[in-house]
Length: 137
Length: 137
DNA sequence: CAACGAATTGACGTTTACGTAAACTGCCGT
DNA sequence: ACGGCAGTTTACGTAAACGTCAATTCGTTG
Image (cartoon, rainbow over the protein chains, first blue to last red):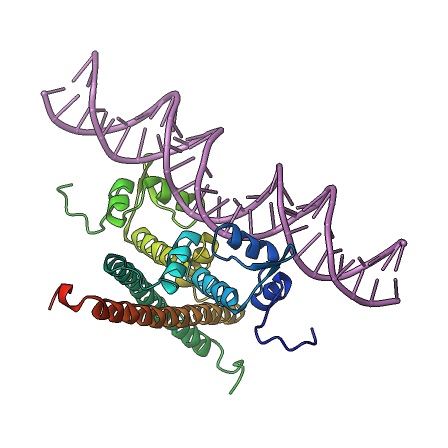
């Protein structure tokens, strides 16, 4: 660990702690073909690329995507130039994702607005309740 | 059905078709306590309130929330004035939700930006490929 | 060298969110 | 009276996404 080795490497445990998941989860993602770390002997060795992929996977999870959907998204990130048909197909996929994301954002905005309203109701109820007992200025 | 009855009512089947889910799903949500329709005889009868709830449930699903989370959210919508402690607790819950939603929105923005970049790469590749064979103007 | 911590594979278990099939009831048009 | 829906309950099935052992293998540290 003292030798200066330009490319950073990570063990599965380190990665797990960094991203707050279990090693089991990381291995599961590998089974599903979302990750494919190198091997030093039989230990898995993760480079920056796998790290980025894991980050993307977890972002996908936070958005509620399934493993299959995440796999599709990851494929987009690494699409090689390819032929025209492939490219158009990819553009189509992107359009789909974008549409889904926009619907999600609309849902979020709606929910945020609702939360704001409910909170306002709470505050008013608190204020009208026992003005003397109020906390904070 | 000819009598003018101010309050609209829906059967489970109608609701299912309207929202594009199965009746099984709707019953499941009832089992989980998310819905509690009235009964005419043994048939379930859904009023506007249950309709709204179902809409909220499905919005939650699109955002990737679990049934448990959705239950919490629904509880917020129907919180009665209650006592001060309850209100503060609710406000706390709202803050949590809001934070989660904001993280999600940030994730969406990130992903959108990524998609835009990938798409741009595709377009450039297409343009640089066979300018003569290009579709559309 | 022995023991310990971190990693590995394999296998079975678990929870969530429904799907699906079976058997029954009530009403409706002919 | 009868078939055909729409609805009901009960119950078992299932795919996804890990959790949870158990048994084993390294590397290293006392």
